[in-house]
Amino acid sequence: MKNIIVFLFSVAILCVACDKNKRASKRLMRPGTWNVVELSVDGANLSPLPVWQVNDCDIYDTSLCTSSWILEGIESQFYWQFNDKAERFNISRVVDTADCSDFYTEEVEQQTYNFSGAYKVIESKRKRKEFESYSTLGYPGKKVVIRLEQ
Image 1 (tube, helix red, strand yellow):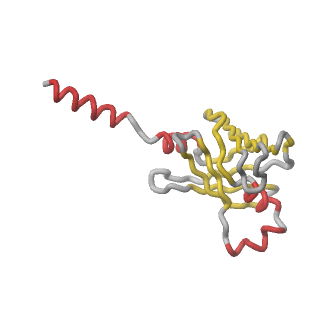
Image 2: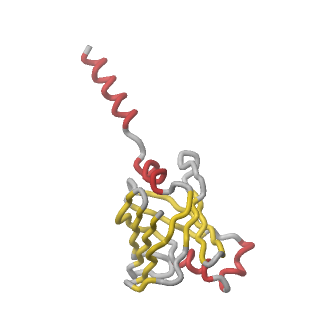
């Protein structure tokens, strides 16, 4: 009898437990528009601010999801992913050889490159997110903050 109770308890724990990375990803990155309300480097906020258009993504089928970084009507694609039990958020510019010529002429392409990196999750609420990094591609060693609102 005790073995059955222990077994049922173990099964219940396994059913309730889930991957925090996936749960946080699903909760954070619901499809739709996320307004970037702060994009700063060492306290200096950049302007104009972009918008993120988060694509529908089943995080259980893929480890990397995509979104669009939109600045003044021009889009650049980036990958996003949570790691370390949803305490880290990674973004990485999608490099398409067809768009390489745009990199030097489009500010949006430079932003997605410069802000690619690993971020610490500072705040993760339903309609407000904040990420901080000192290790982005474009600003290594500088404090970078991205704050989003939906």
